Length: 307
Ligand code: FDA
Image 1 (cartoon, rainbow, N blue to C red):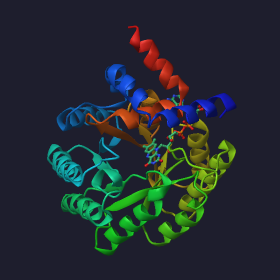
Image 2 (cartoon, protein in one colour):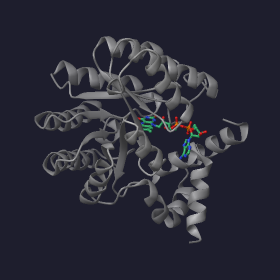
Image 3 (cartoon, rainbow, N blue to C red):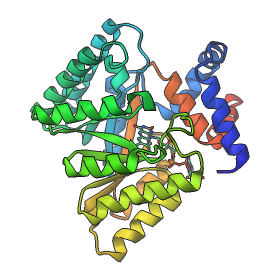
């Protein structure tokens, strides 16, 4: 990442919480954000997943929402997630579920947040569906790992979480989680974190990312590599090839609306590929993180504004 790109990312992540910017973005961004969002409703999202599945791409379905301010919102999100689980089960699409712990109330009342997540995981278990607990910013890392451990202790082993390569603590967490049999999605990390907890330098993050992937593949643990980065994708393919590790032993994951032709290409090459499909009306924070990750996403938005 160049200094310019890094500055851009930091600036955008800083303004992401700014009300004035939010209002501006809400005014003009909604239509444009559609590129990254599969629709406002569950039904629209399931239809998009059907199309992805027909191209050999699996999905994980996310109902947008984070940073809630009242527990009653968390209860509404929980109910929407139960509907989402039923929707996947009854439509027969190939998809699992992704949710954010703060959307379920973690920041407001950890016990109630846990019970909301538990309700979703329990319903998903009835349908043999997997629930991925997304990882948010570092104040929630430990709490999120604890939630997944508690779900497993209660027999809800259809749940897993995400580890972020940029956090200093991640190498140790990776070892612990592998030992405990908890399935992980591996990512670079999307939030603005201080140097006290996270590597700031891209090459360090890439090094950490590869270490996490290696730990998984070497131990024969199913590996979910979530990245749009060709360097990481090609490195993973080569690492597996060199050690005769089957393409069935790992999957790639990418976000809806990003590198869709690459997603299709990976499927055609015989790799397992899963698309993270968000839907709903609470698209603003998700959308801003996508813009922060890659300036080209912003140019795409600007170009579309004049169409
Ligand atoms: P990055 O943005 O670092 O780009 C590296 C290189 O990849 C670019 O220079 C370019 O070569 C290529 N590239 C990237 N985007 C491209 C594009 N659109 N077109 C062409 N080339 C492109 N984070 C988190 O903190 N918690 C979470 O729970 C999750 N969950 C999650 C799920 C899934 C399925 C994905 C894909 C990602 C996440 N993330 C996440 C986000 C993750 O942490 C990270 O911020 C983004 O994936 C960006 O990092 P990348 O490795 O994708 O490429």
